[in-house]
Structures are given as structure tokens and as C-alpha cells.
Length: 181
Image 1: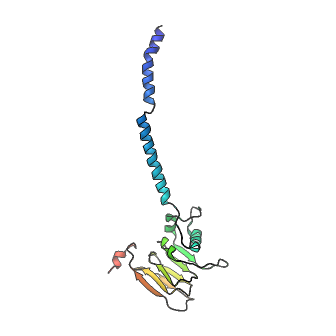
Image 2: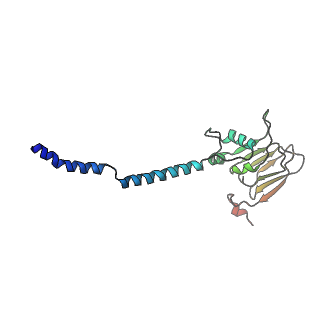
Image 3: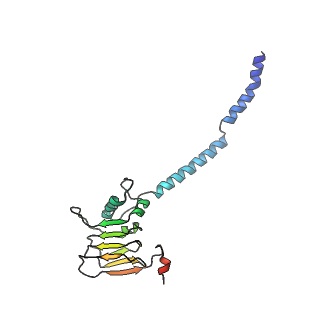
């Protein structure tokens, strides 16, 4: 009988201990809030790593060859920032023509660029302020737009005429404040 009384006396203490070890409703709500915040942060990070959209399929193809470091078949912002050179010329049987040069703005750290055939007469490279070398094969290109302060070496050996270089202010360019007047 005495054992039974001791068990009954310990019963409320054990129930109290069990109730303390179970998460309360408040704890579950706090856990869910943190879990939702984690999911939002995770998907926001993934959204930042999404692939860039290209207007010209041929430039995208060449960018994939040069900058798709993770092999997922897409170019992310980080991958585009790491591309230092881009060759948009024909090579052996790889014949193509660029329909728009607007995608070149996606590569701000581009240092070397080879431009192949295109019916376009103007190339805007004002977002590529790190350019050191530009090779132009297209006879149609007549105007190149560069950011003020960007002075790449221009080569156009097969070009039949002169190329006009226009300079525009690019406030995003490093050191742009030194070249404003």
C-alpha cells in the first residue's frame, strides 16, 4: 500500500515534467515563424541566382561556352560577372549572325571582345567599362559607343572604312566621377 501511495505522490511530478518537455502552442508558433522566415530567405537567395535572359540566342550560346561554371545550362549574374572575354565570331562551321548587341551589357567585367558578322551598324559598349581590346570583323559596324574613360584598343583589320567612336557618361562605371565635366 505504501508503494502505491508513493507512486501516486510521484504521479503529479512526472506529469509536470512531461508537460514541460512537450512544446507548448506558443513554441510551435515561434518555430513556424522562424521556419517561414528561413524559407523566404532561401527563396530570395535562389531568386538572386536565377539565370539571365538574353535577347540574342547566339550571344547566349557563346556566353554558355565561356561562363557556365556550374554546368546548369544557364548564365547567372555571378557567372556573367566572371566573364572576361567573349568571342562572337564565326569559327569553322559555327556560322551565326548577331541580331542585337544589347546582351553585351550583361557582362560588365568584359575585357576582350571579338565581334563577328552582323547587320547592325552601332555597338553600344558603354556598360563594359573594363574593355581593353575590341576586335571588329563586321564591315557593317560604323559606330562604337564607349563609356567616358574606357579606352580599349580597337582592331578592325577587315573593315573597309573608319569606325566612329562615341563616348557617353556612365555613372555606374568605376571612376566615372573623375571623367565628368
